[in-house]
Image 1: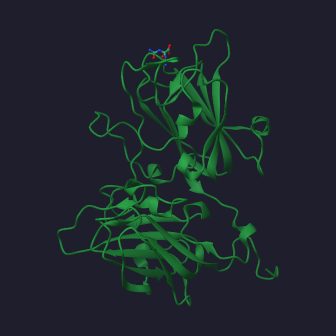
Image 2: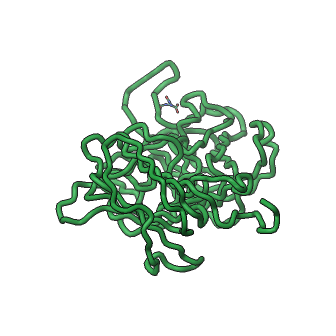
Length: 353
Ligand SMILES: NC(=O)NC(NC(N)=O)C(=O)[O-]
């Protein structure tokens, strides 16, 4: 991306270990709860619940806060094992995809972190039960590796297969605050053949490729599933003082003709942009976005704060990329671009669909 990128959820601002921002860290976290991820099973969660592993945001900690189970942790924590086994948690990815990077964060776990972890992945078709997922064929994507306490561990993954689930193994027991599974979304769009879809949706395979500014919150949020519950779940820029305007670019899930654009300023009450415009470009595979020849999809149009705006477009040109300009600054809760893929992926032109 052109400007700075979505942060790796980790320690609170001001903590001494600033997270490294690698290329891979910019990919979406396929396991994230707000993207539909869930921890569907775990060997144990006596001290702290398994669902915390996929919670968005940085893990919090309040020292000397004791509940009936012991110290309260914002993470998954198992009991002290008295046998030879090890603990595990299975995560259903919110969006199936190719995993490029796994982050195992032991933030705040010091005397109780697991000394080793490994990660496996599997592909389970349909809507399997947790037991069916356990019985699936698993592939190791992160070998058994040493961990340290209160630290973020990044593991690059080199495997081109599309996975639906991952299993975190910890040896022998202990606490992990977050598990991040960064990757490329690979949806099955063939089942929507002949239908209009949101070409800008992350879950359909779209990706934010650039932005002018992500000072308060990430532009990746505008293509996330569902509605933004508050300002931070959308994209918010800093106040501009230079006479310019903010923008972002999206690589669409697949090239297509956009018929309806939805520009959602919900939660931006006093900081919504005054106006916005949309441009499209059709870039053959492998071409750089800087080579794009942009054409107008939506001329500069007035916006209202805290409002979902829908605009009917001419719908006469195929685009693979879209640029949203906002004037002068502010942000956007969501951007939806409804249209027909051209052609449909996985559907041959003579299939009658
Ligand atoms: N002080 C602790 O954190 N102890 C333990 N964990 C919790 N949650 O109390 C433990 O035994 O691992």
